Length: 286
Image (cartoon, rainbow, N blue to C red; front, side, top):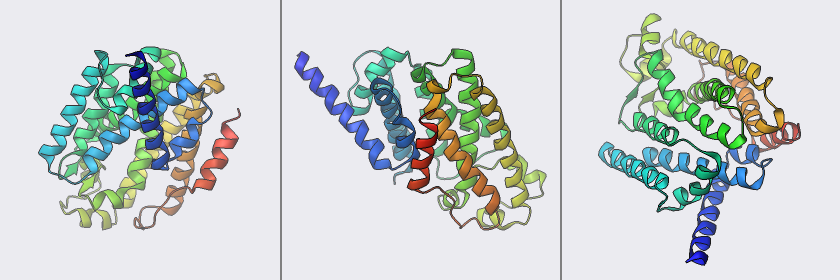
């Protein structure tokens, strides 16, 4: 029985490592500096996030998506009962025990994915936008800071500010791509405050005032970057190297977005693999 469980663990670890490598994201580079246990824990967390995100993005009706998310809620329950069944939750079993990861943060991520599951996604106001960012980004940060070994209070504060900054950057970067899926994460009350009352998504994006709306969201994101910087300065740098690397990658994307502006939404903004490796080398040896 012992050898069977060991083999299952090896299979699970191999699976989540494959998920991270195949994703080709900045996450892979930012986690390379961690010790083995912490790195594998972060790979498992990433794989979980990727699984539930792909579940919502894959083709299928809303009922199928909600059903799949509910299966994941059950799987998280089984994980905390010590009997996970799939590769990702098996890979999470040791990290949950070793780093005292909180069940409610995994469920918050699933709740955030459920907000994305509708055929039409709109955000009513800033409060709902804050909640969305907290669920899909800051909750992941709260799991991460437990792995990094940061203190509870400063860790939660950093997870909040960095999560908000990164997710708002994602939203500003992906406006055009999201619109093609009938999703808009810019709050409706902010649109209305600028006189944008058209319900047609294409018309919203070409409204002359839409660029000003995006600048407002960018200002909020920038304030979160500043606050995250203040918190990082209070931390032991070697504990949060991956968080610093992720923030520096997104900061550069954010700067490029501001330089491009929001009149040419079809012009993509991102960092290439080479730039991500440079950032990993620079901030991974603090």
